[in-house]
Image (cartoon, rainbow, N blue to C red; front, side, top):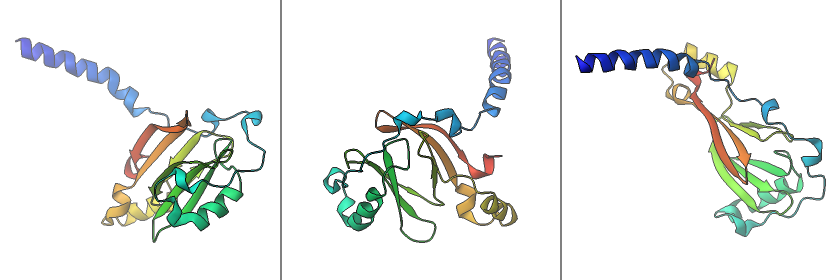
Length: 168
């Protein structure tokens, strides 16, 4: 009797929280917009190749990228280096100091803006998603995951992750 009552309460509880999970809003660049005065306009520092393990291997691309100046979150420079088919290694450089903050892989790229703290790894691509719908036997697209993260206090916090097949 007690078990069945607990089960009923659990089912009622799930019926209330279930719809809230179904209505998760995908983060947008606009939500994490920076003010114009937060954007660094000075001369970017030379990249500090000693600030991140493995950076010397990519020194030429990192130096060239850092010279371009900020393109993300006001004062960071994203440098993307191809590492093969559907493979990129992304580097985040603090333009004011030249220090490398992070490095991470992506499969179909990343999306970001100079005036936003949001960074999207493997953003949903309608053409590739349609290709997966037509060729569901392709394993890569079926496991593709998009990660929405924001930069706060010099580190990334994950806001939301979803497999492509679950993103509308």
